[in-house]
Amino acid sequence: MRSNTKKFIVSILLSGVFLMGKAQNNSLGKNDPEAKKVLDGLSAKLKSYKAVQSNFTLKVEDAKGKLQGTKSGIVYVKGSRYHISITGQEVFSDGKDVWTYDKSSNEVTITKSDPSVATISPEKFFTNFYDKDFLYKLNGEAKVGGRVVQEIELTPVDKTKSFYKALLYIDKAQHSLVSVKWFDKGGNHYTLDTSKLNGNAPLTDAQLAFNKAKYPGVEEVDLRN
Image (cartoon, rainbow, N blue to C red; front, side, top):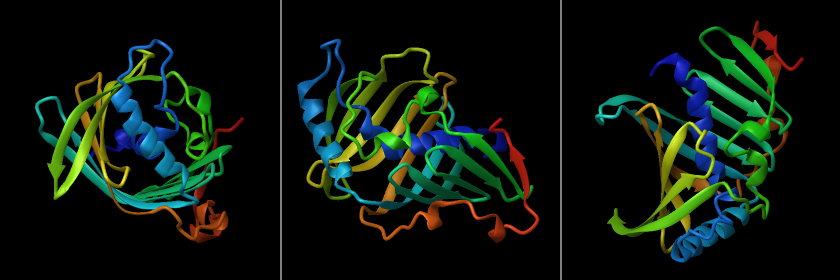
């Protein structure tokens, strides 16, 4: 997988984890009430989590369905803090700043977190914040691995977003997010599958913070000013 996709991969991953903090309502009055029931159930389930640890696999395909690459890792979330571990890369945030560590260069880049420009922000995950970012509809149900999964289609109201559609696959009985698929305007498809999700992970703030001592000789690039 090309290195220049790393930032977008992280954005996609965070979107998958935090999507339901936002995709709840739209004032245009064109949303599917049956889809809202499914989203409300998922939102309630996610908000019951105190701290999250989940394995994930992210697959990238081109417009013809040809596999471009796969990444696997673990994401940890507690409040506005998070830590994403992907092969060759670590991302930490305290809700204000973001530390992105690249193993190949032994370099960490520090930037300010800017929720105002993000489609999805981690701060929304544990809140009752319902906004107007998406139109949504229920496409139907299917059996996957012995369980009934409901497909919700989301369309961003803001047409300047980099993706034009997202599909959420939600376990009907457990109200849990099974996977998310994005369709970007460049033709690529991104599929995020989650597994081994623990909604009450015993996480501390220290575990979610970048600790320079654990990365001997690391070069810091501070872009916060």
